[in-house]
Image (spheres, rainbow, N blue to C red):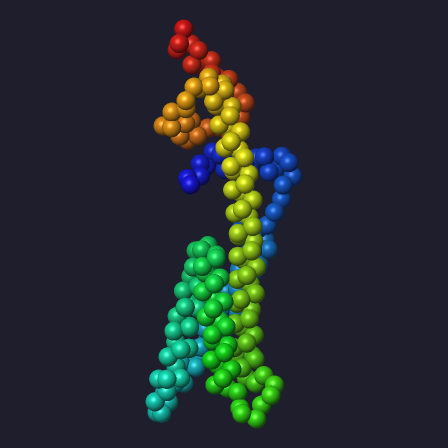
Length: 209
C-alpha cells in the first residue's frame, strides 16, 4: 500500500500533539543497538577470516570441515546486509539461523572428547560474538516491527478520517473517483487540516452554480 508523505506528516503531527512516543528506527535505542550489532559482526567476521585463512594455508585437505562454515558465513553476511537495509524480519532470521549453525559447527570442531564444559576458545571466538549478533539484531527487529505496526495503525486511522470528511464535504456523499481521491491525498496539506475541506467544498459549489 502506497503511503503519502502528506498523510505521514499528519500522523507525526497527531502523535506529537497527543504525546504518543515510541521507539523507532530513528531513535537512540535503535541506533545504539545498531552500533553494537555492527561491532559484533565485525569481530565475528574477523574471527571467521582467520579461520578460513588458516584452512587455506593448511596443507591437509579440509574441504569437508570448511564447507558448512563457509555457507553459513555467507548467509550471515546476507542477513547483515538485509538488516542494514531495514529488511528486519528476513534479515534477523538469516542471522539467527546462520549464527546457531556456526555455533554448532565450531563447538563440534573445538570440543575435545574429554571436555564437559564449553571450550574457552569457542566461547570468546564464536559463542559470544554470534550471540551478541542475535541479541542486537533481535532488539533492532523488535523496535522496527513494533514502530511499523504503530505507524500503520495511526496512518490507517488518519486516512479513514480524511476519507470520511472528503466524502461528506467534497464528494457530497457521491461515489468517490479514485483518481481525484489520490490527487487530493498528493496535495493534502497536513498543517491546514480543516480549512482545506471547506475550501474544496466551497469551490465545488461555485463550479456547480
